[in-house]
View 1 (cartoon, rainbow, N blue to C red):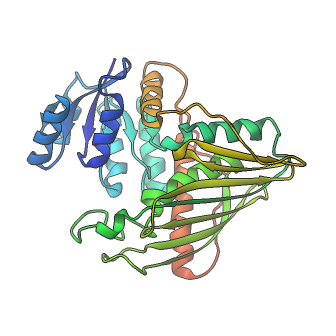
View 2 (cartoon, one colour):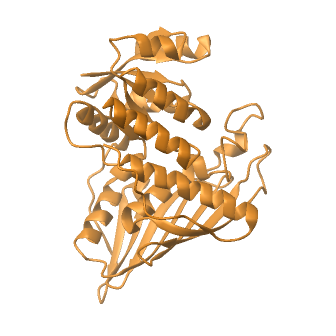
Length: 333
């Protein structure tokens, strides 16, 4: 049983812990830390964990095997490195970091310490994502031409001005860091690395000073193209569509829906077995920590997702295309 500490006790720490609480024999949240004593008390009452007043106290406890980082994005890199040096395995929420450079350093710290690093791109575990990837590997799409995706929700409409997400540093490009990175991960999982990005980002509706309307065009190393939209002031929308010479796929991973249109056939729904993506990713993390197969989101892939996010922000600011040099190449064990 992997004994983990939840760090940063906002709503997402609750979601992760609830996904495994009483359901997993592989991983359990036994400890927690937040700078807020009120949040620590609430979390402990809800999940029966031990509270720690500092991150350093968590890292010093030999009875804790791993940390689950649900902290502000700007803290991830340093906290990952600190955990690795303390001998802890690391599960960190997306985005991995806010820059490629800090991501490489954090990943290298985990590799050097022999600790597992997992980045929480949970929709990689969705049944629709798995089936589209299987179809691609089986050649059922023919030549993959284009992928379009959208991840939007209205939560930023209710952000408090003093909340950490209501900050351009923590929310670059508006919804990219909180939502768009899910689809960047899916698109690069399907089509490989992005080499060129064009983007725009505007603030039209939210009260806080972050963008709420962001879109981008991608060019992939494979020659395929892509479009990503992420809008922070509209009803929840999560989809990706993949187009090829032999088939098109229309997926709603959160709704567990996939429709495939093959050449010379009528579009058809694909029967999918639902997957609890949070439980699946945390148990796969635990398996990797126990010496099993590597976590499916490789550190170099998570770093490339950060590179694409950075390029989107830069392209929107400059009003011009931004190149991303080379394929993901940081070989982290």
